[in-house]
Image (cartoon, rainbow, N blue to C red; front, side, top):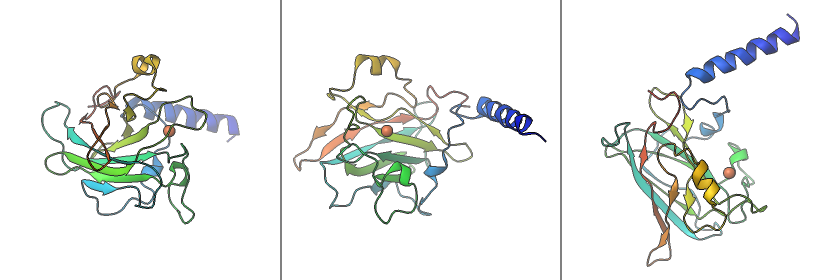
Length: 201
Ligand SMILES: [Fe+2]
């Protein structure tokens, strides 16, 4: 078979699968699984104590589509930039190097809870985009899909245009961080599965 028809078939397959896929994207999600521990907890620490940056703790409840019942056993994968705004892999890092070394997984408990500790990410060095954390959801028996990034109120790079164009997948990702008595930035975000996510059933 010639190259052109093969490419055409691949393109059609991609478009068809995109139509049925939750989240509607052919983007490559394989990095979520690279290095994923076999056993996941509802809490995790993403940054070592030696990681430069201000400490941050984010928690919340993941709800089912009705927005009321907690969703148990849902994997939330997150990754974000370091204090320089870069996705720098660790020298010894084998998996998921493109996402940098500040990445981790949680799996909601029976109450739908999740929590991760890390350092507060910085904006990219070009300073054109607000600081953010990328979240990807993996529910049992569903394909993985992204939801709105975590972004932070008070970030001077977070524009009205950003707010207006947000899809609010899973609900709004813009959270308020407040420093507790230990100097740790604390943030809360509840997530509703499938909310504003294309092709979600
Ligand atoms: Fe990013």
